[in-house]
Length: 185
Image (tube, rainbow, N blue to C red; front, side, top):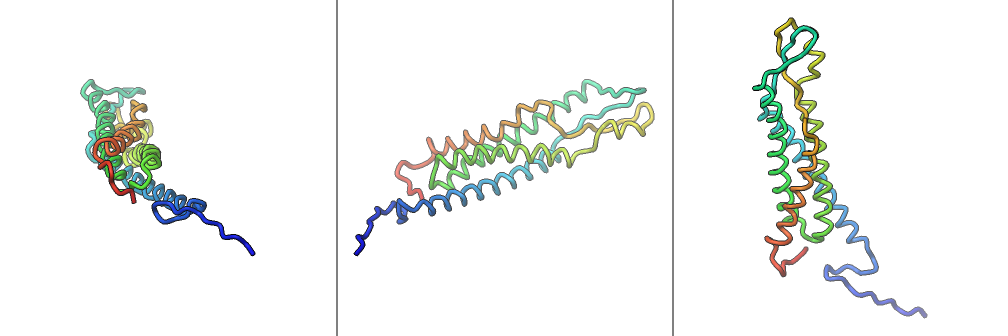
């Protein structure tokens, strides 16, 4: 005759010995966050492509030059990326933590990683949406001809901004917006 094994039930009704419900819930959270940031990165790339005024290079002999006004537009490429990533990261952090609040620590980690995914997608999709390589386009032009520069980052450090602002947004939710005795289901 065997003796029954008693296990304590966790607050969500699952057994503490069986880690599968928590693992399944964590995997579902990871899928939700990955999907969210994949869509956010694609939308961000499209918006970045639409709002950015690309600087133009002018062919001058065997060289390419641009005026100081065009240099300002080149800085604008990074500026628009900064704005889109900051807004997207903050909103994503707050909204995802408000929506998926079962395990806040896991969600903060997932949101930071998801911000990296969104940033990567925004950079690569934005590059593919923009014009092709300048050197190739300039070859066929006469002197004085102009081509738009590529939609690429010139300050690559701002690619971290999606993750940083997403973490900030999620921490704002956890520390400021969440009610102390909120049901975490």
